[in-house]
Each structure stands twice: as C-alpha cells, then as structure tokens.
Image (cartoon, rainbow, N blue to C red; front, side):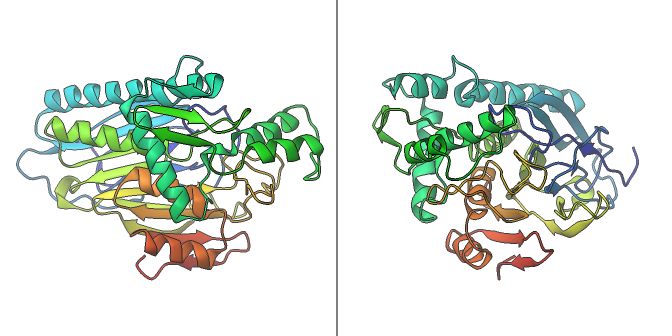
Length: 362
C-alpha cells in the first residue's frame, strides 16, 4: 500500500434523486491520511474532495481497510483502521445493510418508500422512527435558517426539472411554475406523535438535502457498534469521520474550487475534519442550464435559484452539515456565515466570482 494516494469518485446524487450530469460533490478524492483508494471516474462540479496526506508509521499491526458500493446513485466508501481484516469486513457489511434499510425509507423515487407513500397519500399514520427523526430535524433547521431549508420545495423543483427535460426555456413568470411555487411554501407538513400529514393538497416533500447525511451518520454509528471507532464514511460527499486515520493522522478533507476554468484538482483549502461531519452543496448538483443559474436550490419566496458557487459546512455530524449546506446556499454569504456559527457549525462560501468567505470559527 502506498503512503500517498488519491481516488476520484463520481458525483453524489441526493437520496432518491434522478441522475444528473452536473451532480453535487463531484471529484471526491477520498484519501484521508492513509490508504490506497479505488480510482473511479468523475464529472465536473463544486464539491468536497477528501484531501491528500502522508500516512504516519504503522503501529500495532493496524492497517486501513476499505469498501466501496454504489448506493443512492453515488459511490459510498467506508474506510476504517483495524488490525483484523475479517472484523472490518463484517463491520462494513453491517454498516452497508443499515444504509440500504434507510435508503428504502427516504427514497422518494421508490413508490414503496415511506416518504413516497406520504407524498402519495398526504399522510402516514405508521411513521418510521428514522423518518420522524429526520422530519423533526428538518423542522428545526427550517426554524433556525428562516425557512431557507424547506423540504416542501419539491413541486417547484419538479416543475423546473420537467420543463428542462422537454427543452423548455422556463420563465420565472410562468403561470404553472408560480402555482408550483405556491405549493412549495414552508410549513408543508406536520408531525404529531407517530403520524405525519401534509398541510395542503398537492404538497410533496423531499429530504434530499438532509437524508444522505443522516444515513452517513447511521453508518458511522454502526461501525462504532462493530468496534471500528476510527473510520470515515463518504456517502458521495456527505462525510462523517471518527477518531484518527492510520499512523494517528487526522482525516483531511480538501474543498474543490467551484471555478470550472481551473484544473480539476484546484482546491480552496484542506481542512482537518476532526470527529464530525462535513458537506458541500453547490449550484451544479442539478443544473437546468449550462451556466447553473437555474438549479435545484430554489428560494420559496422568489422562485429564483441559488447564485452561490458552493457552500461547505463542518458540523458535529453529517446530517447537520448536509442540511445547513443546503439551506445556506440560498442566503447571502454574510448571513450564511452568521447562521452557521449560531448553529455551532463552521462555514466556507465560494461565490461565482471567485471570492471566498469563511466563518470566524472555520
């Protein structure tokens, strides 16, 4: 195994979302502080690039184990430090099983998922505990970000995507789009004990901006339960790390520059994540034109798409980082930095003109 290596991964696709040629979190170079990683092809876009670092000396027979699977439309890689290869492989199998079970809950493209049933029926009386947890976290994030985080934006995003699919140059003044936007107002759902209901006819939810982080956290918890306390979960760019990498080095994550005129390996910075989560959201995740000015990150107030290049958030877990990165893409940079700090998170914003903004705790 080489001491210094890299791997480029395909871009992430949010849980249950359709394939896109400009998906979020492209160019994932998953290296952390150690091991050789599986080389995979990539597309362009603003995103997280787990950075390069020199491994320290191998101690106690420990080594890095890794497995990669295709889940949620992206490559999910589990990396862990272990002295027992068989133990690591069993732990990976258990963690992947946890992820697959949760994907079946949150995938809105799967008609049998709990989220799809909610969207189709307008209510769900037998609410899975994990769905309830993420819905409540969504409500909290919406409250803390003045509804910049809005799971109910689905009708407007779907309308925009359908127009793009048929080659229509959609005007923001389009009557159908305005109607879809009205259905996408905040407060689209209410959780009451073990039941959830949609608050207006035609409302639909997406948890694409938070569920993948939740699933990464669940995989991390599974690895802990299996005795692998030093690990990295990379769910297509929603990253959760724990402990230290091989040689007692930190897990370092590089953040790719969103300027597409720069080489693919151009980084804004490399950061030591510590034990926690990090995620990047960018306007090329699902772009509906070549410039990315029309994309899936929509304001419920104006219907306009986010204009930022990318937003990276480092938080106590991947779910929080995922949700905040989504929400803070829709507010001015100064407000994004302030909201991040108020939520005990650190934030880095890259605008389309190459300007970089960092919160004081970055």
